[in-house]
Image (cartoon, rainbow, N blue to C red; front, top):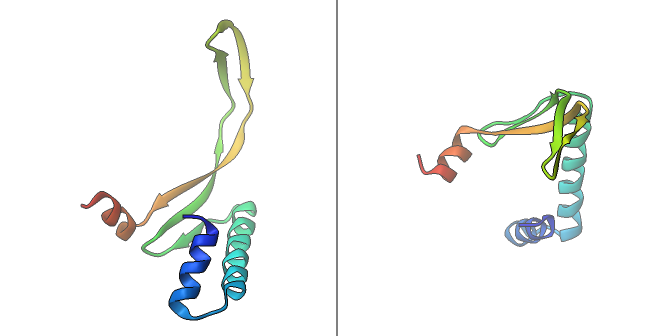
Amino acid sequence: MTKRDLVMRIADETGLIQQDVHAVIQKSLDYIVDALNEGDTVEFRNFGVFEVRERKQRIGRNPNKPEHVVTIPARKVVKFKPGKIMREKITGS
């Protein structure tokens, strides 16, 4: 499902104009990104939690030339942990 598919589906079900729905979805996504950028955790009850975690620096090797060692720098990554209802619907348990 793309953002466009989501906009069309919500617009059809609610009777709202697609441009308005798109603006609300885009603004919501912008606020989520802003919060994560500031280091905050974004939690949607029964859906899931987005959080930023720091990956430590580590050593990597080229499988074709294992003698070449490359240092992979530390970086931030976004992790998502699904909520209880989402987990139950997807896994069936």
